[in-house]
Image (spheres, rainbow, N blue to C red):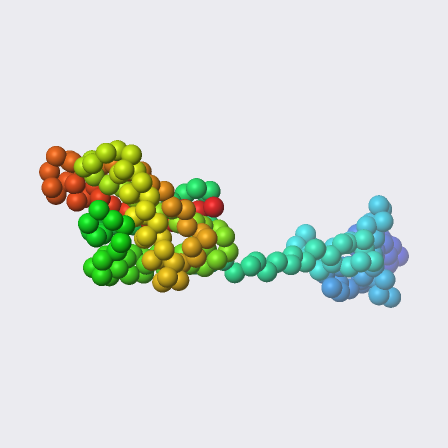
Length: 209
């Protein structure tokens, strides 16, 4: 009986030995399994054995490649005004209360005061114009009084006078395009005095290049 107990204990000891995992006694360091001598434990395919599926630390000796570092490129500081599609009208100023001197393109003192206000509206686009990213189209109109050909020429002269004045205030004359449309495109009834006054106008359009 005594010999039977000894044999049983020996048998159990053998079973425990067999049941122990191959890496028993091995310690886990840096999220990888290492042997007691510090060497990395590898599987049958030669890959390093991780201590868990959530291992995040990478080791070059295990063939792990470090993640590429993303370097953000510095972007050039943009202007305060968004760059939009070419030929988009960024700002439109209609000046329909410029009187001019009678039958001429000479600006009155009252006209200049009105244009000063218009200049302030266009000032935010000065930097865009300096960078040649925008232009100003100055378009003159008349009412239907008088010959059509004469009105065409008069509208051109009046638009040019407005452009010259805006240039004297600081707007780049080279970035302005002057056009005369004569009595075309009326915005009011030429049959009334009030309508004719509205039709005698100058339009300033800031346009994206």
